[in-house]
Amino acid sequence: RATIAVDNVLPLPPPAEATATEVATASGDAERAEQALEQAISLAASLAQAYLAAGWAVRLIARGAEVPFAAGPPQLARVLRTLALLPTVSDEVPFAGTVDPRLESVLVVPRGVRSAGRPAQVVHVLEAGA
Image (cartoon, rainbow, N blue to C red; front, side):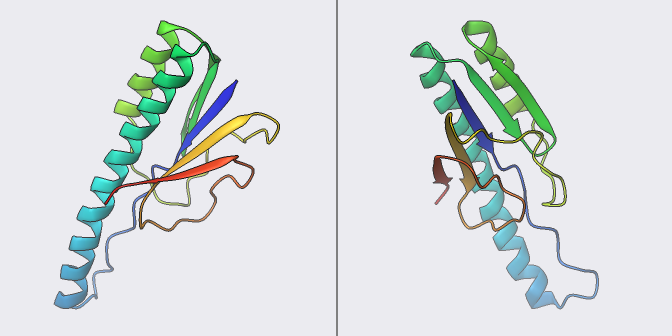
């Protein structure tokens, strides 16, 4: 059994009173963060496919989304559908489940995106993005 956790958080936009330079910097950072998140979602999908192909039961958790443990092709379809429809959220939204430290687990995070509330009990952490 393996839990795949993907952090679907993106930084908040700059406040209305931000300077033009701050807005421009934030726009570039936001674009890089979005690309990194897309790559994190793609990596999570690949991990799910690999675990399921090896016969493992897989569970997916994210901020505001969860797919319970199951195995086989229908589970891959459920995981892929959830990942495809995964909304971006702030780090105020909690992960939809916890991680059992006794089981295999992978947290996939977008590179360069800091956030609070990530599961602490994961076995592996992978960063995705350039």
